[in-house]
Length: 170
Image (cartoon, rainbow, N blue to C red; front, side, top):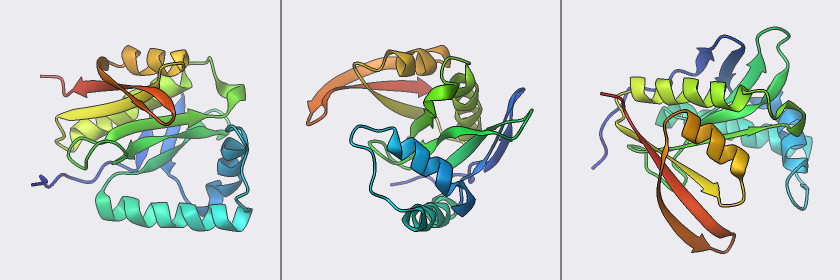
């Protein structure tokens, strides 16, 4: 049985970043992220807009979703960070993030993930999950810096997948 939680804040600020719920106006940057994945993407700009609008509707219904990460200094969109059910549950969602490659190595993912984690715990949730492919050393650094610990591993069609967990601070 699922507990009722307050909705996650869909607008967050950190020292260097602002985060807000993704929407149709984020479609071109989302396509840029998708193009960087193995095999690229065949999604059109219109399809990307439609998907983001649908995600926004689901986020407002569920109280969790993805936020666009922007630098406060110039409003440059860097990527996204947020919560999803994914391999978790609404009670114990999974945190996910992705930055455009040119913004890697500046601590932006860690800063955004910490803000999203704090926002998730502010809803009353007691535990969050993260799943990281065993080869993704930078993602391990991000989640481990913000307090996640390795829990277990599985092998699936994509190879080894490591589950990490973070409990709400006492």
